[in-house]
Length: 125
Image 1 (cartoon, rainbow, N blue to C red):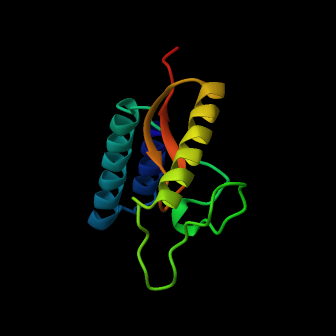
Image 2: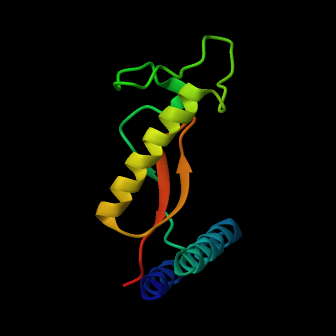
């Protein structure tokens, strides 16, 4: 990449064209951004977010045998302690555990209320 820039700079100078200060500042900012992105990528913690297919408790309208709808009526808030939400949340958590059991890793967090999914951290190796 630097070699290409050097060639371009030499050609520009040969034809009497010099880059403006704004162009140099933009190039420096781009290089700094690339360095920051590279440092962030090297410090990755490998925690992901997996979205499951079933709706979260906040929008579940029924359909699973034995689990009543949990979606709150318009204008009302979801009660996370209601028996229906607790039951459906346990159902979702069991699905998360089953999916994680098939893929391996360690579960970092379960999402059940406004998003149905979980955060796994894969085993190293």
